[in-house]
Amino acid sequence: MAQITILGAGIIGMATASVLSRNHKVTIIARNLPGDEPTIAWTSPWAGASFIAGGCSSAREAKMQLDAFAELWRWSIAYPDSSIKQITIEDFHDDKTEDDIWWKDYMPEFHFLPPETLPQGARIGTSYKSLILRPDVFLPWFRTKLEKSGVQFRRMDLKSLSDARELGHDILINATGFGSLTLQDVHDHDLETIRGQTVVVKSGYDKLFMHDTGETYTYAIPRLDGTVVLGGTRQKNSVSPDVDWDLVQDIFTRINRHLPEHFSANPMDSEIIGHNVGLRPSRKSGVRVEKAVSEGQKIVHAYGVAGGGYIFSFGIARAVRDLVEEFLFPFPESKL
Image 1 (tube, rainbow, N blue to C red):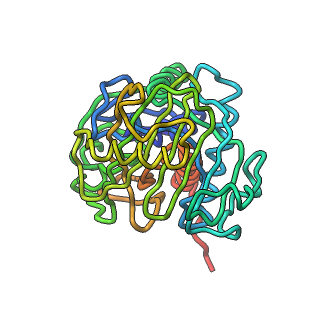
Image 2 (cartoon, rainbow, N blue to C red):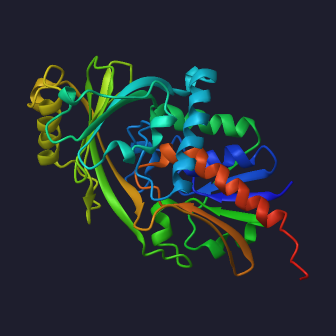
């Protein structure tokens, strides 16, 4: 049994702890922990959150998504108190063809939608059974589940990975999201923050909706509790934690264009429950899940999923587990 330290208590860090704690002693260290008041500097609490396949830069990333979906699907059945629920999605794209939809052979109840049902500009529409969850419910629930299995949580604010050496672990997992941009011995300049803003409204709408133009995307994510999350935005070069009221109007205008029978273009016509503003840790070259050795520490990096933390979650965790095993049980060097 190895001693594993995971830096980061977001969905990637906790999913990784869930997988590794089956065979190892795991401690999660982070500045922000589940149950804390959310801040813009911590991504996971602000998510919609839903499982919408796609956005992969490689077959490896596609497998991560499928692995995550399989685990979350099982949890939606086994743990109803987790807030994970099954839901039907209608997903539209302006910049894809049927050949681009790699998930068509994997998602439950998948089918292409008739051309006459497509929104203006969309080239393709799909429908399948998907998943939603409430981060404000799921993250504290998940923490409790992990603690019951022996995972420890410690509040620490590290400035570098080398600061963790004194903890005495065998392997360190770097699941810091865009923290890897500022960690002194990582400074991954491939990372960029993408600001997201959503609005939560009272509504009985009960189908997950997404229309991605390639530049902007519009969505409605029902929580199936009488509320719906409306979005979305992709803002680069902004880290403002304040609600942008022009964006609020833009979201309502776009969602009304797509779902006029459910949502007015005037925000005043809806009962607004709240607003979410968060930063997504995007990485230009794709998700980073790889081994490294630095200053005597064996490290596995696991970050760069942008807004796909829940979509990749347990898939990244399984990939991290494989790299941990490579550290612990290395292949002998060839004598040839």
